[in-house]
Amino acid sequence: MPTLKGNGDRQMTTETYDVDLFVIGAGSGGVRAARIAAGYGARVKVAEEYRIGGTCVIRGCVPKKLFVYAARFPQEFKDAAGFGWTVGEPTFDWSTLIANKDVEIDRLENAYRSNLEKTGAEIVPQRATIEGPHEVRLADGTLVTARYILVATGGRPNLGLDIPGRNLGITSNEAFHLKTLPERIIIQGAGYIALEFAGLFAALGSKVTVVHRGKGLLRDFDDEVADRLCTAMSGHGVTFEFGVTIDAIDQTGEGKQVRLNDGRVLCADEVMLAIGRVPNTVGVGLETAGVALDMAGAIAVDKNSRTNIPSIYAVGDVTNRVNLTPVAIREGHAFADTVFGDNPWVVDHSLVPTAVFTEPEIGVVGLTEQQARAQGYRLDIYKADFRSLKATLSGSKERFFMKLLVDQPTQRVLGVHFMGDGAAEMIQMVGIALTVGATKADFDRTIALHPSTAEELVTLRVKHSSSDKPAEVARVAV
Ligand SMILES: Cc1cc2nc3c(=O)[nH]c(=O)nc-3n(C[C@H](O)[C@H](O)[C@H](O)COP(=O)(O)OP(=O)(O)OC[C@H]3O[C@@H](n4cnc5c(N)ncnc54)[C@H](O)[C@@H]3O)c2cc1C
Image (tube, rainbow, N blue to C red; front, side):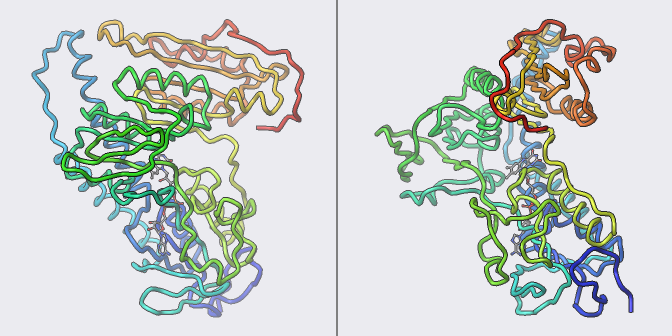
């Protein structure tokens, strides 16, 4: 009888259970875990109730980025004039964008499906529910026993309070399938999803109002970057209503009316609720198996993504660690290597490059200034704020902002923040430097690539500010 390698609680033969691994959810984390585990010879089943690829591929990162590309053309058309181009009056057809996006998403889903199947994993196209530490019930009633269960059910939009007319609002899920481009849209929220949609709808021609109960954007980002983004997006025509919430949504003959808690009424064709996401833990059978949740309702896991039930693991958004695709993929990979490949490793969540595909774009890796200060670091701060070479001829008012946070005693770079054209692509490379612990001196001795926007990063000489204040809080390593 074959026996799999692994550090599991029970070194049982593979014949004891129907499968070695049952994955619930074929999104970023689940697919990676299933493929790697199957590659080690594990017998794997993956249940998916919707479409293979999960949020990222079907209704997240990928379609969103395709929309962002579409939304950047109007500015390109304008910029072209300064370089001698005459561009006729551009027209835009929303339904062409939706149709072409759908074709690409279908192609990707098929690629995910065939790559998964090539590894030998079996896709079960239905909802699955846990019935015990080793038991999963499929929607058709079949019971499958598994040596290990991996919960990779992701997250879903938070709909907030059950206000009157909430069902009249859409979420990001529906935004990818709107029949027409809304002339006016109200977006509730100030996180990256709300702002990316605000930016792209505005660029495509919608009148956009962002409603947010707080005072600023992007809570977990550097305050200075978030403030600059607010100014820049306002300059692109997005209206921000801070310090208010939506009390009710009403349907009228002319569209939707939003009643704000300060008594005002706003009108729009669509209302989008983008006030965060919640882990998909409801109806998964977690309580039946005794799987513990944390205070936020996410599955509580240890550094190996193991729950309190030794045979049940969880990865990705359902664990609410860092809710991004590459993180879910890493967690799924680490799980499969550790449990099935006899190659244990853990994911480092401390340095995750992140982008916000707004206009202007943001790219970030490492600590924000407020996080660094709260952790007691003494900082040297370097900043640059300039017009890129392209803007000289295009006449665009867009600027590029960069901010470098350096730990004063060690000169290690703790955080890099970019805002402007190409910020996302650049920050991925900077992530490598920070991962290997680069110091300011390492940045300085790197030869610039000229002419480029990124060269400013290695030519920052003058300290914008430094803080000699001793640490008030115990330093936490990044
Ligand atoms: C609009 C939007 C934009 C985003 N943009 C980015 C971005 O630019 N970059 C980035 O890194 N991340 C982005 N994200 C986040 C990213 O999509 C998620 O972090 C990632 O998809 C999480 O992967 P996952 O495997 O945890 O879950 P998911 O990809 O959500 O997969 C979970 C799967 O489980 C299935 N499922 C749930 N319950 C069951 C069940 N009981 N039985 C069977 N199947 C079930 C679901 O149908 C789903 O397919 C974005 C998200 C959204 C919503």
